[in-house]
Image 1 (cartoon, rainbow, N blue to C red):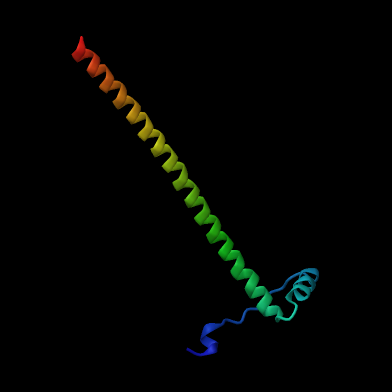
Image 2 (image 1 turned 90 degrees about the vertical axis):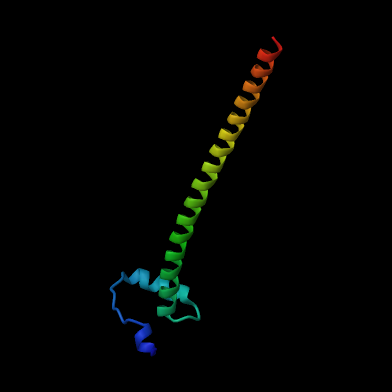
Length: 89
């Protein structure tokens, strides 16, 4: 695969003050490298946010399952003790 196949040239217009801030932030990198790095990071952040949301939902469901397990155990214990009382009486 040639370099030409890996990259697409695209011209954009941005406000001059934004251009200047990007230029200052780029330091030793090219402006293109700075913009590409920031765009890639924005996608990584959204993926992390999605993964965090999924992990949070799973954790909530696990808590609900634990609560259900506790309730089932309590009910089982209660029913078992009632059964013992019925047999004893």
